[in-house]
Length: 543
Image (cartoon, rainbow, N blue to C red; front, side):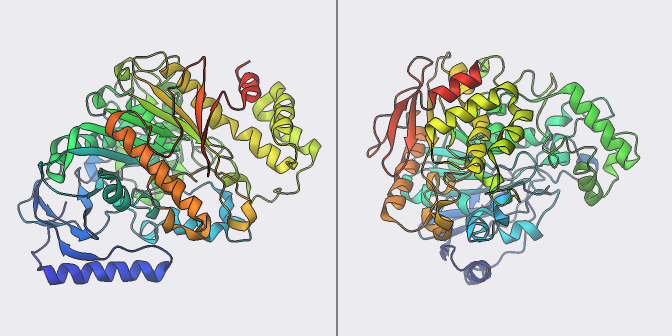
């Protein structure tokens, strides 16, 4: 973390107000918490830092946890940063990782959906402030010091290991810290080719295909070593994430370097059951080398970052969907086994888990496609067969029974959304065989934007579990029942972080998941527990 000349309290507050005004000009609908004072100086293992007090919450943005992974450190495991002695001002988010593009087509829908998603899911700063030097984290806490040790919730952002950032508006930890008495940490780390290029057989450091995962381990080590000074309990750390972030959580539960750093885990719409094989990852590396015309890791370290990114997204490396093959590698070094295949990882047998998905995951990717709303019955079957084969027609029939009014476009979305559903069930079944409990959920509440066209898409639960519903009125509306659901969901997540049990006042009793009962919390305006929801769909997929 670079240090700056000391500045006084008035200058700090002027800078904070300027940042808030700049952000408000970009999107006036976003809530702003204006700083009222500076925090006390906190001594971390890297050096002293100071943040801002925003509406009573001690807020630290852009805390460096790793040395810049550039030059000779590109593709290497993270190193400790050079320590500093002057106070480092933690006033703004650190740069996000260099990004591949998002895959959600809903932003193209000719209505309010696109701007509404942007209101909570992207930050203008992320677009212009991307860097290989991205090993930064952020902390929100109700109170500094070790007098009271609170549960710590460490968030790993989504984006399929390819894009995303810990500084998106919906991930702001202010409300979780203030309303639920927890310490919230969000993390940036290396993505795509910069974090998951396997160079083990091409002159790279052993485990290079998991450098991005080792960044997350380094962030958890920072939490272990420092979070007590921020009012957190280093022995009560919950890691949670959504989509690619959920898969990051799954993978860390099978990563020996992370053992002892995690107490509980929440996996949202990202049941990472398997990693990339070493053979496949090596073949992808060789494709990268051919595209760029270099021979080994040393040659790749000399390639400018924009050319590396272009090669990572090229057709030869894309794996069919915009580079989505970049992911952790089962390399026998960092990741010795698939995270949850064929069984749950033995090293995490005592770690409780919440696992779940949304009811209509794929509307985020289908609404906005040229065919949306125009799909015929015949086209529906033809479109599903490449992915589901002989199960396509039985699945269509099952969804027609579940949702008889659905058009072919919605039936297609229902069937394709089952990937996250069955993956979550598989993970829950395997985890249920271990010592610690697992709790299953499905998010049914649907967004009202554009007459409810999105239903309950991928990502929709995030502002609820962060207690940030009011940050997204365009997407979520302003109904009292919606705000109440946000309070209940965030309370359940915080309760789980505190005790390993998500049961909280206002929700029905949430039993542990077993392969016999399959108890599942269905989150909605009136939440309920259902045993084996969508049983017919599950039986087809597991047959």
